Length: 159
Image (cartoon, rainbow, N blue to C red):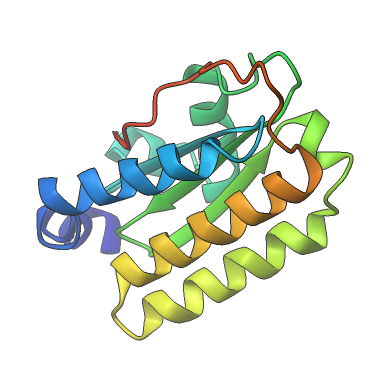
């Protein structure tokens, strides 16, 4: 029921164009300090067909990770922050280069903190805090080098 009736009107209220520009800027600024590539994707709700097929947030995040080609970076250091608004679920998918250095428990803790902040009705703070923490992990494990190519766009993705 949440997918049918709630997610679509939260999208524009919680993520207007000005806020999406701030998210883009946080991603761009963070990527100056590391060799990773960070992407934020938000989806208002699942389609009825996806619901009937039994889609789960993790599986959908993996589909998005693949479709956006976040795995296609030189150092395998792409990270997706995926938010599904209707159910207020979040997933972080890290490519194998960063996943080898940051254990899954670290990503799970970020997701739990994100969800807790969302429960208090602060979606913009949840996104910004999470992006900053992901950037900090990437700076720690994939510091920027002299040649720091821009491999993925910084613009948030609305699905």
